[in-house]
Amino acid sequence: MAIDLAFIWAAIIAFAVLAYVILDGFDLGVGILFPFFPEKHDRDQMMNSVAPVWDGNETWLVLGGGGLMAVFPLAYATILPALYAPLIAMLLGLIFRGVAFEYRWRTRRAEHLWNFAFAGGSILAAFSQGVALGALVQGIPVEDRAYAGGWWDWLTPFSIATGFALLIGYGLLGATWLVMKTTGPLAEKARRMASGAAVATVAAMGAFSLWTPWLEPLYLERWFGYPTAIFSFVVPLLVLGCLLVILNGLRAGRDVLPFVASLGLFVLGYAGIGISFYPYIVPGSLTIWDAAAPPESLAFLLVGAAVLVPIILCYTAYAYWVFRGKVDPEEGYH
Image (cartoon, rainbow, N blue to C red; front, side):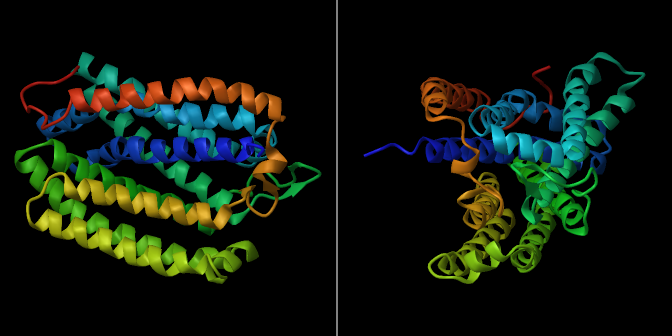
């Protein structure tokens, strides 16, 4: 029985992207919420809560992007020209945000500038990711195995709306992370913000669930055709279940449960996208087998992935274990 290397690599890259979204999502969310916490003491705690893990979280972005280039070069060559602008904006946001982690602690006179860089970089990176996702979902024109659109094709009402929706979703992750990691007035304020963000996130998911099927005949067929239509009924119920867990957990004073349920919302949304896309890597144009590198290359690279991915998982888990628990308001990792 032949091993479907293209499918295995599609699963690896899908996992890497999901890991990036849920891990870097909460620390981007902390930056998105930064302007709502004007006190320096609160901002110090917020940055300290993610300082030990934020750069490790971005490892998954490198694995997802690098893996796409190596194992699905045709998809990479098609998607990148279509999304140059939002992806460049995302990288610039991540750069300013990363530098702010170091420079903010080294200056007093220009601290407000690095506060702006941290918040602005987080907002720009998150919004750009949402725009890129929306542009990919709405479809990329392909002719003769190459991108056939223009420079501004990514800029549509759907992609802009997706950008704002992801800002809200990451804000939810950031708020529930702060509930889990901080104490005192900061945690209580984050708890109140998380409730509103949870409702807004689920409302946005509902709106896009009604909007997306009409963008592409493939989506309409997947969402309402048998057997995938089963998920169209099950997933919304699970989403509502996660929302109830978040709201009840916040109301009951639980610290960890709202964050875990918020991650569940993202996993469910990601699963919905996967069901809509599969087996296409560029919706309606290129399947994972069309875009895959030669089998020899896939097999060679899989050996490296079999070694590196478990190592990344282990050191990520170890970092979170070492820095578990609440952040001490009087101490930091800087």
